[in-house]
Image 1 (cartoon, protein in one colour):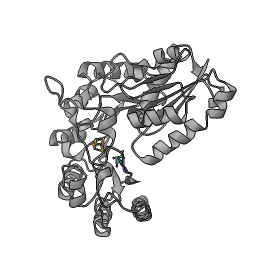
Image 2: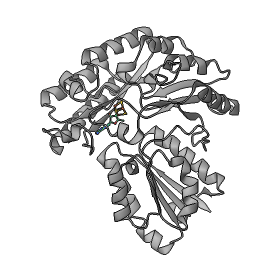
Image 3: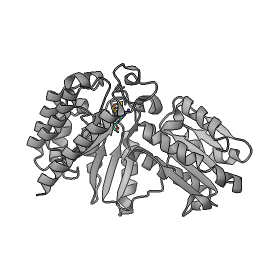
Image 4: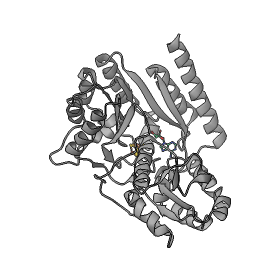
Length: 373
Ligand code: 5AD
Ligand code: SF4
């Protein structure tokens, strides 16, 4: 009995695929080298941009032939994309050979859905779910261990689908996180622990009593052992002085930060609902560099947000030039159904978006070349 998992999207999904692998291996399945050999094929999908969703449709569709030849193969589609009712229904209609369609909140039930799938098809989406604390993982990386500290997002950036498919912020308890990290460290092979959440800087605001993310870092670092702590993703609006001081003074915390700016223009930042200005972002960078001179910085940018003018895009270029990031991720704005920005007038033509993303990436290359020199 063999399984094959196809993972799309961010580190959170990579980590959740480690959970899927654990669920399948506890049922006696072993990894297959290729999907054709598998008895269970799982697609763990991403909804962040249209391109990611199109790839899912293409790859699931391509299994039609395989399913005809081997009808006993179970095909499951889960993750952010299928959490949307419209996509789940579309998959059901377009690919009737898919056996299981579930979302993000009922992933932990995958094992029992597989048992049912032999009798009848499963399409089950939960609208909310508690954090699954009894989870275990089949860790896929030899030196880095992912640890989820929270799920969901409350920010509703106007372009982003995440709050709709991952729900509101829910933090795991400090005790459970410490217990998991202790276990990982005791295995002795992981040199790095990467804490995951859509917005780690607001960790603990929903716990009672409240706990700050900086204090969680402090507690984790007190665990004895030779390991470094890294985390993602940080929102500039929640990057506190306490956290900057913790990064500066805690030897176990890596001196690198991924701090998505998204745009360098204040009008666009406002439309994006990011709750900070270019000036605020730059002052955070200054503070970080002053307190942690060796820090490496990376960021995300979206180009071609609705109504973005050439000049406003140039503000993004100038921000990138000014900060001299070590690396950036540049994305073409992709309208996501149900978000505020998707309904806005002034959508930017694809050629212009392509041109802007290329110019931004070219600038990044120039900066990196200079830095390497
Ligand atoms: N279009 C393009 N990029 C997006 N991102 C999030 N939503 C969209 C969208 N609709 C980018 C942001 C975020 C990263 C993970 O993906 O830059 O930081
Ligand atoms: Fe999306 Fe904004 Fe939340 Fe990040 S902070 S997941 S971009 S809504």
